[in-house]
Image 1 (tube, rainbow, N blue to C red):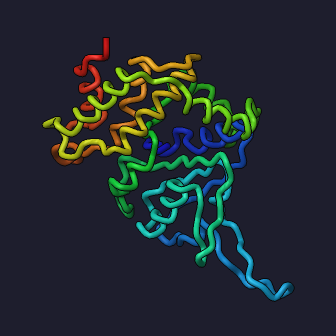
Image 2 (tube, rainbow, N blue to C red; image 1 turned 120 degrees about the vertical axis):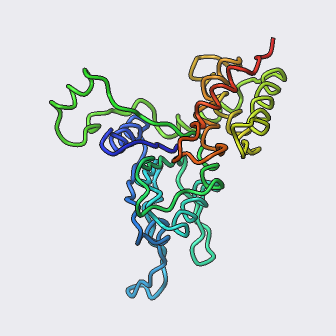
Image 3 (spheres, rainbow, N blue to C red; image 1 turned 135 degrees about the horizontal axis):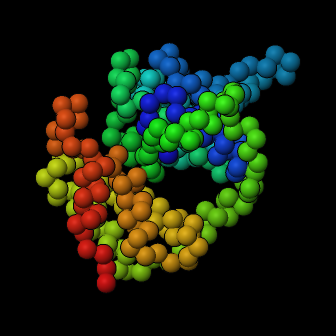
Length: 271
């Protein structure tokens, strides 16, 4: 998941709370311009006592990893994170190391601050299942923040165990999707490729992601089958970061989220 939002709205607190609720191990990596791939993945070091080389795991070896301000590090380091997200494993000195299961990455970036950043290329944005933002809290919630202390999230208790989470993931993959819903997803993706408001439509990976997210949403709604509303509910979060607008966003081009929402409204669902 890619969280795009301004500083101070609780992105780190949210990630910690999610990890605690899922009973998962959690590591936070602050991305900076001098961060190296080895700082994330780990390094091979020589153990003098044993007279052998051994692998020292990096912070990527956790169930839930928070990549804070991911666009502040170099493309080389971003690519190191990319392999882990894509394959669930890392290679150090030619040796494969499997990451723990389940494995999730929550990356954050500030959509308004571009000084000293390395914008994520489209190929890497495409690796995130969804992109979303938290937004500012309402007045009542912010009042509670006023009276709080510290980072928060420490009192969140686990509601599932990692093994149960893995079982839920497997269950989501078994949610039924008939041909009509599949055609609806294909039509939506194809609409992004023909829209005059976009110069780059969603890739086949976007089709896969929308399918997976729709099934997961149906499961969360307590169903073992998908309906058009499941696709509509996740379409913007899944597709908006996989497309490019026809124009410069900094010069006032229409946000891609608005374009995707319009395409969803215009595309007739299956009967």
